[in-house]
Image 1 (cartoon, helix red, strand yellow):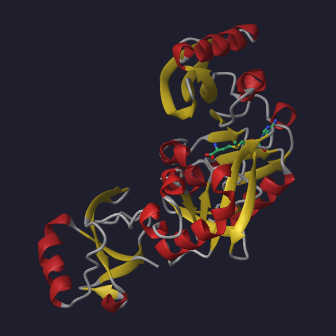
Image 2 (cartoon, protein in one colour):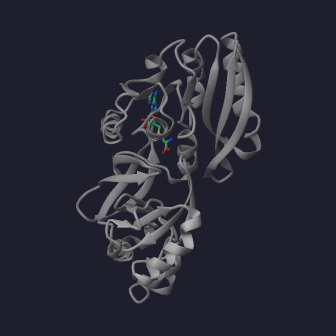
Image 3 (cartoon, rainbow, N blue to C red):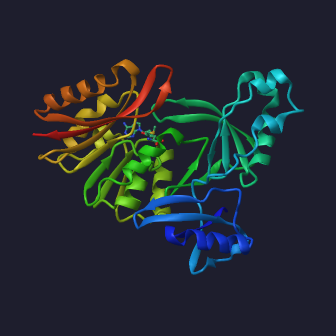
Length: 343
Ligand SMILES: C[S@@+](CC[C@H](N)C(=O)[O-])C[C@H]1O[C@@H](n2cnc3c(N)ncnc32)[C@H](O)[C@@H]1O
Protein backbone atom coordinates (compact mmCIF):
# COMPACT_ATOMS: atom_id res chain seq x y z
CA UNK A 1 0.00 0.00 0.00
CA UNK A 2 1.09 3.60 -0.64
CA UNK A 3 1.03 5.59 2.60
CA UNK A 4 0.51 9.30 3.26
CA UNK A 5 -0.47 11.78 5.98
CA UNK A 6 -2.95 14.61 5.54
CA UNK A 7 -2.00 17.79 7.35
CA UNK A 8 -3.13 21.44 7.41
CA UNK A 9 -1.14 23.41 4.75
CA UNK A 10 0.49 25.68 7.38
CA UNK A 11 2.15 22.63 8.99
CA UNK A 12 3.61 21.55 5.62
CA UNK A 13 7.23 22.67 5.92
CA UNK A 14 7.62 21.65 9.57
CA UNK A 15 6.34 18.10 8.97
CA UNK A 16 8.15 17.66 5.66
CA UNK A 17 11.42 18.48 7.46
CA UNK A 18 10.59 15.96 10.22
CA UNK A 19 9.84 13.33 7.55
CA UNK A 20 13.21 14.02 5.87
CA UNK A 21 15.07 13.92 9.21
CA UNK A 22 13.20 10.78 10.27
CA UNK A 23 13.97 9.20 6.84
CA UNK A 24 10.30 8.32 6.18
CA UNK A 25 9.49 10.83 3.41
CA UNK A 26 8.67 8.88 0.21
CA UNK A 27 10.59 10.88 -2.36
CA UNK A 28 9.14 8.95 -5.33
CA UNK A 29 5.70 10.56 -4.93
CA UNK A 30 4.48 14.15 -5.09
CA UNK A 31 3.53 16.23 -2.05
CA UNK A 32 0.18 17.58 -3.16
CA UNK A 33 -2.66 19.85 -2.12
CA UNK A 34 -6.06 18.16 -1.88
CA UNK A 35 -9.56 19.47 -1.34
CA UNK A 36 -11.94 17.37 0.81
CA UNK A 37 -15.31 18.01 2.40
CA UNK A 38 -13.36 19.00 5.53
CA UNK A 39 -11.20 21.62 3.76
CA UNK A 40 -7.79 21.94 2.09
CA UNK A 41 -4.93 19.68 3.16
CA UNK A 42 -1.42 18.79 2.14
CA UNK A 43 -0.89 15.10 1.50
CA UNK A 44 2.68 14.07 2.35
CA UNK A 45 3.75 10.67 0.99
CA UNK A 46 5.51 8.56 3.61
CA UNK A 47 7.11 5.13 3.78
CA UNK A 48 6.31 2.21 6.09
CA UNK A 49 8.97 3.60 8.47
CA UNK A 50 6.53 6.38 9.46
CA UNK A 51 4.57 3.91 11.60
CA UNK A 52 0.90 4.53 12.33
CA UNK A 53 0.94 8.27 13.12
CA UNK A 54 3.21 11.25 12.50
CA UNK A 55 2.94 14.12 14.99
CA UNK A 56 -0.58 12.91 15.83
CA UNK A 57 -1.68 12.68 12.16
CA UNK A 58 -2.78 9.15 11.17
CA UNK A 59 -0.99 7.41 8.31
CA UNK A 60 -3.60 6.64 5.62
CA UNK A 61 -3.63 4.69 2.38
CA UNK A 62 -3.15 7.10 -0.54
CA UNK A 63 -5.45 6.95 -3.57
CA UNK A 64 -4.87 8.27 -7.10
CA UNK A 65 -1.10 8.08 -6.62
CA UNK A 66 1.07 10.64 -8.41
CA UNK A 67 4.74 9.76 -8.88
CA UNK A 68 7.42 12.40 -9.18
CA UNK A 69 9.19 10.48 -11.90
CA UNK A 70 6.85 8.31 -13.96
CA UNK A 71 7.78 4.61 -13.87
CA UNK A 72 10.25 3.75 -16.63
CA UNK A 73 8.46 3.23 -19.92
CA UNK A 74 7.24 -0.19 -21.02
CA UNK A 75 9.43 0.13 -24.13
CA UNK A 76 12.50 0.55 -21.89
CA UNK A 77 11.61 -2.68 -20.07
CA UNK A 78 11.20 -4.52 -23.38
CA UNK A 79 14.43 -3.38 -25.03
CA UNK A 80 16.45 -6.47 -25.84
CA UNK A 81 13.38 -8.76 -25.92
CA UNK A 82 11.62 -7.13 -28.90
CA UNK A 83 12.90 -5.93 -32.28
CA UNK A 84 12.88 -2.19 -33.14
CA UNK A 85 9.80 -2.74 -35.38
CA UNK A 86 7.99 -4.54 -32.55
CA UNK A 87 9.00 -1.90 -30.00
CA UNK A 88 7.42 0.77 -32.21
CA UNK A 89 4.07 -1.02 -31.83
CA UNK A 90 4.17 -1.44 -28.04
CA UNK A 91 1.23 0.47 -26.51
CA UNK A 92 2.00 3.60 -24.51
CA UNK A 93 -1.11 3.35 -22.30
CA UNK A 94 -2.96 0.79 -20.17
CA UNK A 95 -5.40 0.79 -17.27
CA UNK A 96 -4.69 -0.28 -13.68
CA UNK A 97 -7.82 -1.38 -11.80
CA UNK A 98 -7.13 -2.50 -8.25
CA UNK A 99 -4.21 -4.91 -8.67
CA UNK A 100 -4.94 -5.82 -12.30
CA UNK A 101 -3.33 -4.26 -15.40
CA UNK A 102 -5.50 -4.12 -18.53
CA UNK A 103 -3.79 -3.57 -21.86
CA UNK A 104 -4.78 -3.70 -25.50
CA UNK A 105 -2.01 -5.40 -27.53
CA UNK A 106 -1.94 -5.21 -31.36
CA UNK A 107 -2.28 -8.53 -33.25
CA UNK A 108 1.23 -8.08 -34.67
CA UNK A 109 2.61 -8.55 -31.12
CA UNK A 110 0.56 -11.71 -30.44
CA UNK A 111 3.64 -13.88 -29.91
CA UNK A 112 5.13 -11.33 -27.50
CA UNK A 113 2.05 -10.93 -25.31
CA UNK A 114 3.49 -12.87 -22.35
CA UNK A 115 6.81 -11.00 -22.45
CA UNK A 116 4.82 -7.73 -22.45
CA UNK A 117 2.69 -8.94 -19.53
CA UNK A 118 5.81 -9.90 -17.53
CA UNK A 119 7.37 -6.48 -18.17
CA UNK A 120 4.20 -4.78 -16.91
CA UNK A 121 4.23 -6.84 -13.71
CA UNK A 122 7.85 -5.80 -13.11
CA UNK A 123 6.83 -2.15 -13.55
CA UNK A 124 3.94 -2.51 -11.07
CA UNK A 125 5.16 -4.79 -8.26
CA UNK A 126 1.85 -4.39 -6.39
CA UNK A 127 -0.18 -5.80 -9.30
CA UNK A 128 -0.77 -9.53 -9.67
CA UNK A 129 -2.55 -10.08 -13.00
CA UNK A 130 -2.36 -8.80 -16.57
CA UNK A 131 -5.40 -8.96 -18.84
CA UNK A 132 -5.50 -8.31 -22.60
CA UNK A 133 -8.37 -6.15 -23.83
CA UNK A 134 -10.20 -6.64 -27.12
CA UNK A 135 -12.95 -3.99 -26.68
CA UNK A 136 -16.49 -3.75 -25.30
CA UNK A 137 -19.62 -5.18 -26.85
CA UNK A 138 -23.38 -5.51 -26.57
CA UNK A 139 -26.16 -3.98 -24.51
CA UNK A 140 -24.56 -5.24 -21.29
CA UNK A 141 -21.31 -3.41 -22.24
CA UNK A 142 -19.31 -6.58 -21.58
CA UNK A 143 -15.59 -6.52 -22.29
CA UNK A 144 -13.81 -9.15 -24.40
CA UNK A 145 -10.67 -9.91 -22.42
CA UNK A 146 -8.04 -12.63 -21.93
CA UNK A 147 -6.07 -13.32 -18.75
CA UNK A 148 -2.37 -13.30 -19.73
CA UNK A 149 -0.61 -13.62 -16.36
CA UNK A 150 -1.82 -14.19 -12.79
CA UNK A 151 -4.68 -16.29 -11.53
CA UNK A 152 -7.52 -13.93 -10.74
CA UNK A 153 -9.53 -11.42 -12.76
CA UNK A 154 -11.52 -10.18 -9.76
CA UNK A 155 -10.29 -7.13 -7.88
CA UNK A 156 -11.38 -4.25 -5.65
CA UNK A 157 -10.60 -0.90 -7.25
CA UNK A 158 -10.41 2.06 -4.87
CA UNK A 159 -11.32 5.46 -6.26
CA UNK A 160 -12.34 8.73 -4.62
CA UNK A 161 -13.04 7.08 -1.26
CA UNK A 162 -15.19 4.29 -2.79
CA UNK A 163 -14.67 0.56 -3.37
CA UNK A 164 -15.64 -1.06 -6.67
CA UNK A 165 -15.40 -4.85 -6.64
CA UNK A 166 -15.53 -6.31 -10.13
CA UNK A 167 -14.35 -9.07 -12.44
CA UNK A 168 -12.53 -7.17 -15.18
CA UNK A 169 -13.32 -9.89 -17.74
CA UNK A 170 -17.07 -9.67 -17.02
CA UNK A 171 -17.86 -5.97 -16.50
CA UNK A 172 -16.51 -2.69 -17.85
CA UNK A 173 -15.02 0.23 -15.94
CA UNK A 174 -14.25 3.28 -18.00
CA UNK A 175 -11.23 5.35 -16.92
CA UNK A 176 -12.51 8.20 -19.12
CA UNK A 177 -15.57 8.58 -16.86
CA UNK A 178 -13.54 9.36 -13.71
CA UNK A 179 -14.44 13.06 -13.61
CA UNK A 180 -18.13 12.28 -14.10
CA UNK A 181 -18.07 9.74 -11.24
CA UNK A 182 -16.52 12.47 -9.04
CA UNK A 183 -19.11 15.03 -10.21
CA UNK A 184 -21.96 12.66 -9.32
CA UNK A 185 -20.48 12.36 -5.83
CA UNK A 186 -21.29 16.07 -5.28
CA UNK A 187 -24.94 15.89 -6.39
CA UNK A 188 -28.21 14.54 -5.00
CA UNK A 189 -27.94 15.45 -1.29
CA UNK A 190 -31.29 14.73 0.41
CA UNK A 191 -32.97 13.80 -2.90
CA UNK A 192 -34.64 10.71 -4.35
CA UNK A 193 -32.60 9.55 -7.36
CA UNK A 194 -32.93 6.81 -9.95
CA UNK A 195 -29.79 5.44 -11.64
CA UNK A 196 -31.31 3.75 -14.71
CA UNK A 197 -28.13 1.97 -15.94
CA UNK A 198 -26.39 1.32 -12.64
CA UNK A 199 -23.80 -1.29 -13.69
CA UNK A 200 -21.67 -2.18 -10.67
CA UNK A 201 -22.53 1.17 -9.07
CA UNK A 202 -20.25 3.51 -11.06
CA UNK A 203 -22.36 6.59 -10.26
CA UNK A 204 -24.68 5.31 -7.49
CA UNK A 205 -21.85 4.39 -5.11
CA UNK A 206 -19.94 7.74 -5.15
CA UNK A 207 -23.23 9.64 -4.89
CA UNK A 208 -24.38 7.52 -1.94
CA UNK A 209 -21.01 7.64 -0.16
CA UNK A 210 -20.36 11.39 -0.50
CA UNK A 211 -23.65 13.24 -1.17
CA UNK A 212 -25.90 10.87 0.82
CA UNK A 213 -29.25 11.27 -0.99
CA UNK A 214 -32.39 10.15 0.79
CA UNK A 215 -32.67 7.21 -1.61
CA UNK A 216 -31.13 5.93 -4.85
CA UNK A 217 -32.99 3.31 -6.90
CA UNK A 218 -30.22 1.60 -8.91
CA UNK A 219 -31.47 -0.46 -11.84
CA UNK A 220 -29.27 -2.94 -13.72
CA UNK A 221 -30.29 -5.48 -16.34
CA UNK A 222 -27.21 -7.74 -16.40
CA UNK A 223 -27.30 -10.28 -13.52
CA UNK A 224 -23.49 -10.41 -13.33
CA UNK A 225 -23.13 -6.63 -12.94
CA UNK A 226 -26.11 -6.69 -10.57
CA UNK A 227 -24.35 -9.18 -8.27
CA UNK A 228 -21.35 -6.81 -8.05
CA UNK A 229 -23.66 -3.83 -7.53
CA UNK A 230 -25.14 -5.57 -4.45
CA UNK A 231 -21.66 -6.46 -3.20
CA UNK A 232 -20.42 -2.87 -3.69
CA UNK A 233 -23.42 -1.51 -1.77
CA UNK A 234 -22.34 -3.71 1.15
CA UNK A 235 -18.61 -2.91 0.81
CA UNK A 236 -19.34 0.83 0.90
CA UNK A 237 -21.91 0.56 3.72
CA UNK A 238 -24.69 2.35 1.81
CA UNK A 239 -27.46 -0.25 2.23
CA UNK A 240 -29.62 2.43 3.85
CA UNK A 241 -29.44 4.62 0.72
CA UNK A 242 -29.30 2.36 -2.35
CA UNK A 243 -32.12 0.01 -3.36
CA UNK A 244 -30.78 -2.28 -6.11
CA UNK A 245 -33.29 -3.47 -8.73
CA UNK A 246 -32.55 -6.22 -11.27
CA UNK A 247 -34.38 -5.48 -14.51
CA UNK A 248 -34.91 -3.36 -17.59
CA UNK A 249 -35.16 0.30 -16.58
CA UNK A 250 -37.77 0.91 -19.30
CA UNK A 251 -40.15 -1.15 -17.12
CA UNK A 252 -38.53 -1.06 -13.67
CA UNK A 253 -38.12 2.73 -13.27
CA UNK A 254 -40.58 4.28 -10.81
CA UNK A 255 -43.15 6.88 -11.94
CA UNK A 256 -43.58 10.37 -10.45
CA UNK A 257 -41.17 9.67 -7.57
CA UNK A 258 -37.71 11.12 -8.12
CA UNK A 259 -35.83 14.44 -8.17
CA UNK A 260 -32.94 13.30 -10.36
CA UNK A 261 -32.29 10.66 -13.03
CA UNK A 262 -28.88 9.34 -14.07
CA UNK A 263 -28.78 7.89 -17.61
CA UNK A 264 -25.17 6.63 -17.80
CA UNK A 265 -25.47 4.51 -20.92
CA UNK A 266 -24.57 5.23 -24.53
CA UNK A 267 -25.76 4.03 -27.92
CA UNK A 268 -29.54 3.95 -27.52
CA UNK A 269 -30.02 6.13 -24.43
CA UNK A 270 -32.62 8.29 -26.22
CA UNK A 271 -34.97 5.27 -26.31
CA UNK A 272 -35.20 5.58 -22.52
CA UNK A 273 -35.99 9.29 -22.30
CA UNK A 274 -39.73 8.81 -21.79
CA UNK A 275 -39.44 6.46 -18.78
CA UNK A 276 -36.72 8.79 -17.41
CA UNK A 277 -38.98 11.86 -17.63
CA UNK A 278 -41.93 9.89 -16.22
CA UNK A 279 -39.79 8.86 -13.23
CA UNK A 280 -39.48 12.54 -12.16
CA UNK A 281 -41.90 14.06 -9.66
CA UNK A 282 -44.85 15.98 -11.16
CA UNK A 283 -43.08 19.25 -10.38
CA UNK A 284 -40.09 18.10 -12.46
CA UNK A 285 -36.41 17.52 -11.78
CA UNK A 286 -33.00 16.96 -13.34
CA UNK A 287 -31.80 14.46 -15.97
CA UNK A 288 -28.15 13.57 -16.60
CA UNK A 289 -28.48 12.26 -20.14
CA UNK A 290 -25.47 10.55 -21.81
CA UNK A 291 -25.10 10.18 -25.55
CA UNK A 292 -22.40 9.30 -28.07
CA UNK A 293 -22.70 11.82 -30.87
CA UNK A 294 -20.73 13.01 -33.94
CA UNK A 295 -18.71 16.08 -32.89
CA UNK A 296 -20.60 18.49 -35.16
CA UNK A 297 -23.96 17.45 -33.65
CA UNK A 298 -22.90 17.50 -29.98
CA UNK A 299 -24.60 20.85 -29.24
CA UNK A 300 -27.84 20.07 -31.08
CA UNK A 301 -28.87 16.41 -31.37
CA UNK A 302 -28.97 15.40 -27.67
CA UNK A 303 -30.90 18.58 -26.82
CA UNK A 304 -33.40 18.03 -29.66
CA UNK A 305 -34.01 14.42 -28.59
CA UNK A 306 -34.65 15.49 -25.00
CA UNK A 307 -37.01 18.30 -26.03
CA UNK A 308 -39.04 16.00 -28.32
CA UNK A 309 -39.42 13.42 -25.53
CA UNK A 310 -40.39 16.10 -22.98
CA UNK A 311 -42.96 17.67 -25.32
CA UNK A 312 -44.53 14.28 -26.07
CA UNK A 313 -45.22 14.04 -22.31
CA UNK A 314 -46.49 17.64 -22.05
CA UNK A 315 -43.31 18.85 -20.28
CA UNK A 316 -40.65 21.48 -20.95
CA UNK A 317 -36.88 21.01 -20.99
CA UNK A 318 -34.17 23.54 -20.20
CA UNK A 319 -30.59 22.49 -20.94
CA UNK A 320 -28.34 23.55 -18.06
CA UNK A 321 -25.04 22.28 -19.39
CA UNK A 322 -23.52 19.97 -22.00
CA UNK A 323 -20.22 18.42 -20.90
CA UNK A 324 -17.76 16.42 -22.92
CA UNK A 325 -16.86 13.20 -21.11
CA UNK A 326 -14.36 11.80 -23.59
CA UNK A 327 -13.62 11.07 -27.21
CA UNK A 328 -15.51 7.85 -27.90
CA UNK A 329 -14.17 7.02 -31.37
CA UNK A 330 -12.75 9.08 -34.25
CA UNK A 331 -15.09 12.06 -34.73
CA UNK A 332 -17.52 10.87 -32.04
CA UNK A 333 -17.86 12.34 -28.53
CA UNK A 334 -19.39 10.93 -25.37
CA UNK A 335 -21.31 13.84 -23.82
CA UNK A 336 -23.55 14.27 -20.80
CA UNK A 337 -26.35 16.82 -20.88
CA UNK A 338 -27.80 18.19 -17.64
CA UNK A 339 -31.42 19.16 -18.22
CA UNK A 340 -34.15 20.57 -16.02
CA UNK A 341 -37.57 19.12 -16.84
CA UNK A 342 -40.60 21.08 -15.67
CA UNK A 343 -44.34 21.26 -16.23
C1 LIG B 1 -21.79 1.06 -19.78
S1 LIG B 1 -22.38 0.73 -18.20
C2 LIG B 1 -22.07 2.25 -17.48
C3 LIG B 1 -20.62 2.60 -17.47
C4 LIG B 1 -20.30 3.69 -16.50
N1 LIG B 1 -21.04 4.87 -16.78
C5 LIG B 1 -18.82 3.94 -16.18
O1 LIG B 1 -18.52 4.94 -15.53
O2 LIG B 1 -17.93 3.15 -16.49
C6 LIG B 1 -24.10 0.70 -18.50
C7 LIG B 1 -24.84 -0.41 -17.80
O3 LIG B 1 -26.23 -0.33 -18.20
C8 LIG B 1 -26.77 -1.63 -18.23
N2 LIG B 1 -27.98 -1.61 -19.05
C9 LIG B 1 -28.10 -1.59 -20.40
N3 LIG B 1 -29.39 -1.55 -20.78
C10 LIG B 1 -30.13 -1.50 -19.62
C11 LIG B 1 -31.53 -1.41 -19.34
N4 LIG B 1 -32.43 -1.37 -20.33
N5 LIG B 1 -31.95 -1.38 -18.06
C12 LIG B 1 -31.03 -1.41 -17.04
N6 LIG B 1 -29.69 -1.50 -17.25
C13 LIG B 1 -29.23 -1.54 -18.52
C14 LIG B 1 -25.63 -2.48 -18.79
O4 LIG B 1 -25.76 -3.84 -18.45
C15 LIG B 1 -24.39 -1.82 -18.13
O5 LIG B 1 -24.06 -2.45 -16.93
